[in-house]
Image (cartoon, rainbow, N blue to C red; front, side, top):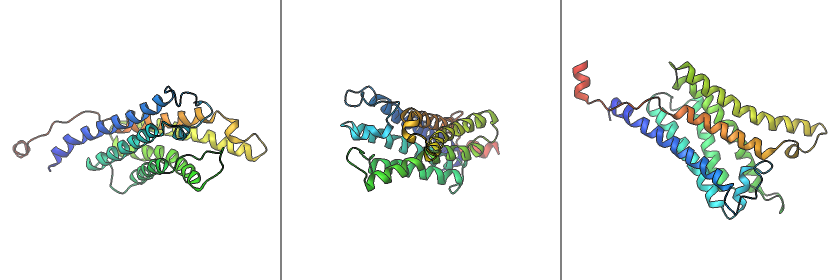
Amino acid sequence: MTTSQVTARSPLALLAAVVSVAGGALLILLLQVLPATSGISPVRRTISEYALSENKWIFDVAVLLVAFGSAIGFGALIRRKHLPALSAASVFCALWTLSLVVIVAFPKNNWAIGPSAGGTVHRIASVVAFVCLPLAVWFAAKAVFPSSPARRAVTRVLAVAALAWFGVILGAIVVSMNGGRPWWQAIPLGLVERAMALTGLIALASLLIPPRVVAPVPDEALRVAS
């Protein structure tokens, strides 16, 4: 496959990645209005709470769509030579994607029943995912937008905003450790987590949306032009 063919096909892969990520996000939003999960508070309950309902399969599909879109999106950036196959961005993206799969494989713990090993794995994977996504976007932005400072700045601001939401959770934990209320009660945890996830996914979309679609150039034309 020639370089021109890769350049032409990669934008389609990037668009497919954005559609996949957006589809997963929309399914999560849908869960909030479906009867079986509409009673879950988006302010106090985390997103993973949906996995404890009969709509678990929708939650799983949504998370896997986001993981799939992230993988093919960063894969397209690597094929376009925007990112090295081994870089900080690709490593953090791999951790983000793998963490999403782990989140599906090990559902959130039902604390009404008691702690579990699977619930602990889920919690760790959630933390890794929320931290690694904005870091992947931050490190990738410079390489993906070397001559587009405006897009690079917007993408990085979104990545920092996603990390800032995680900082709110860390702050609540610190306050709790110093005699404050339990950290999950000190803040609207569900709202903060949803804001963090939404900001991170918007940052990812900002990174993956191709600036334009380049039509394939025949090899013969390239030889004539050269």
